[in-house]
Image (cartoon, rainbow, N blue to C red; front, side, top):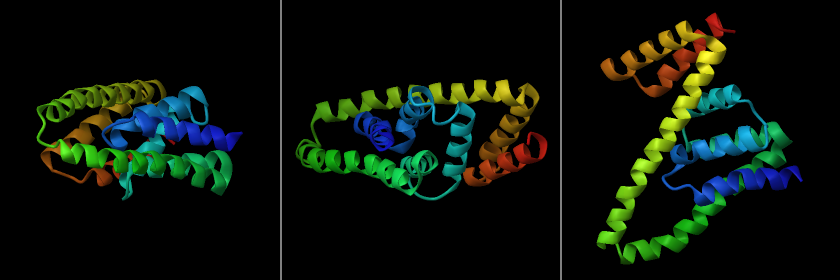
Length: 176
């Protein structure tokens, strides 16, 4: 039964999500944290941060990690397959259709309407992480990490992986 739940937890967000890994992360969080309770919001946020520091698509890394934590190697394989199969099937089916109508104004409008929805989903996920951080780490630590991260990313153009690693080190030293 756990393999079926893992399959559904990753298949559904991947079949209905549009916009790639970052766009479906809120949907995966809803399944993993909200529906099945395999992780807390804090653990999910830490897993996401660590996953973002590593190369390759985020959705498959999350699926592999969560699947492994829940049901070992078999769980990781099921979760990764559930993540990849919808994309493969949808891309094969939609590629021909979109290619045929690539100059259509309707196809162009569809893409323009999807972007704001993805932005709102990412904003909602960010707000959830902020509230969780305020709850568990406190306002001072959240502000320090946020301000230093913003300065590093915007002013010094530091690669996000280094910012995430620095935040992890800070958390290990001062919050662990």
